[in-house]
Length: 228
Image 1 (cartoon, one colour):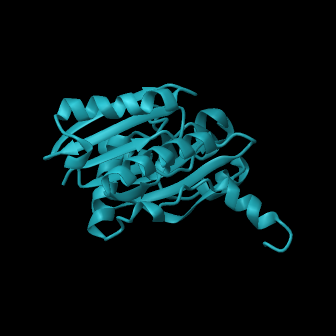
Image 2 (cartoon, rainbow, N blue to C red; image 1 turned 90 degrees about the vertical axis):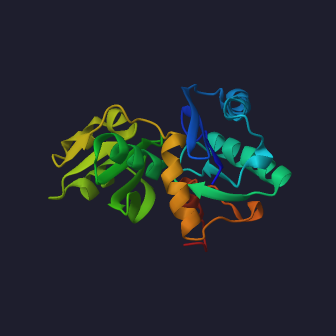
């Protein structure tokens, strides 16, 4: 199985390519430079692996949540690549990717991912290990830090990842959470096991069917008159 994954949803920009069980990847923290960096990074890993886009089986992207601009960049790039190749596409949660990294690097089996969403809110998701991949508990949401703290306080010991813990120090009042300071942003290389699980479950789709996830758009839409 040969697969290319890209992510530009946060300040980080990353690409991961698996070809014949060999992994090639790039990761940079480069705020506001994603549109300039993502295509050269894709080209770099393809050249390193000595393959072309046509040699791949699947494409995948970080579908959010994250910055509106960043999510749109990844969505647009993957649409262009998929339309040119005809490959099926997978949409990967950025929050789940960080939870997966916590499992791979720290053996954490229950993880809360919190990304700073600005406007005094965080993107929030909780995950539990299931067959070696992180599975979502409940739903991903955008909420104020104080609401996140309510959800965090429990008797369950878990790891914490993402920029939200530094942006909103009040979250650290949750005594049951051990924050992993080295996992701040999603990284496409940790989306690989998530992508494989989605493929195994039949979730690869045609490019016309992919959907970015903004979360905040969803909340605003619900507040419109007649749309509650």
